[in-house]
Image (cartoon, rainbow, N blue to C red; front, side):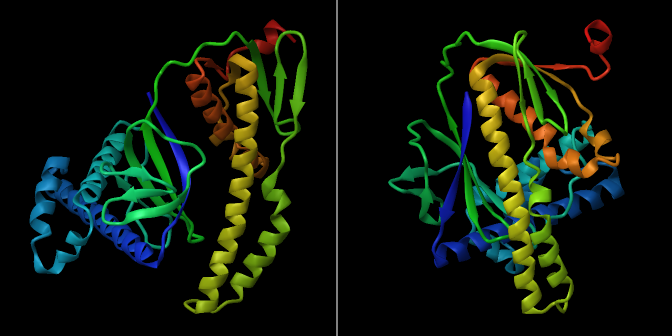
Length: 319
């Protein structure tokens, strides 16, 4: 069984420069072969497989104009090609949208599929050495991969994927049904008693601060250094809103999983609700995110999440 842990990284200036090169090279490889696959599909009606792209990448790195690709570990570039192949497969199987070109102005990420380990208070990465990290718990099992990301506010994180023993003892707990709403985010009923949890509404809480910083951004000259600084100030507010919502939903889902062994929830159409007049409140509540958290946490604890069809006439059976 696989588990993941997200930790904060604190790279020094040399490591930040090396990471910037890695982000750029992986982004270039993704965009280069995405365009090449699109052109080949238009000409021949066939795309590129991972083997075709990997062979071409080996020859590409030998050309004088692309020698900079050798500065990055080869495993990370190959992983970028695997991710591109998976993106195409997900599109053709109607699980995701068509792959898009990556931009240097958005969140950057790179995945190291091998040669990663924990050394003291740091994380050892290929061609970077030991990067200082804040690791909340010890990881004694084998690390499968590490995904390093950089946010728009210049913060670095690492998602560590590692193996764990699938030996969680099943505890006898309650079976509860939860109803999701906007007035009360969650109404929990276990057959005898019920409890309600109110939403925190982080978007409305920080709306005034976000409005002021966006107004200041609109007055900055495009392309100026002051505008770039103000963009980061706006991004920090958005990050604060997202972190507040994540923290609340993680704590709420953990409480529900600790108290219940089976949770029954309605399968809501969040996309449809987001097209109504209540779109802002629906998206701010994070219904889909909460159900996702409940699902994987119950699976780890040996529990089960049951999603009832949204068209099931439960009101007609019991008021």
